[in-house]
Image (tube, rainbow, N blue to C red; front, side, top):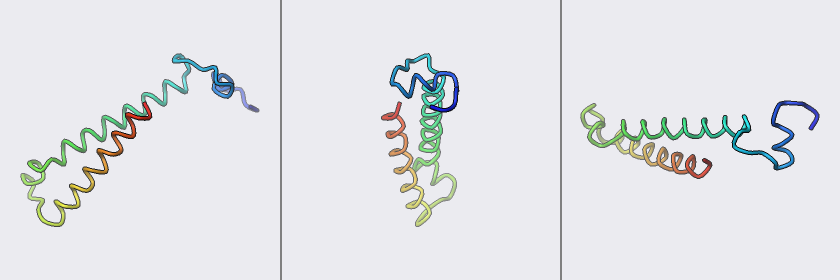
Amino acid sequence: IAWRDPNLPEMNTMKWGSDNQFVTAMYYRVMYQVTLTSEFIREMSDDKLSSRGITGVQAEEARLFRNEARFLRALSYAHA
């Protein structure tokens, strides 16, 4: 590796550990994504959609988005 970022050579040679700043940053970012998707799923519940007057085609589209958020949350857990 041409640059000398701290902890980067350890990742290049597969000798990294939990104290590596890149590993820590990636873990925190992935868990932040879990938080965002969980909040989105909560806000897109059928009860909340109907209480906001979202019905019909818009409600169906919101349900699709909710399912996509579930997938992204599961993918984030897999990456963590």
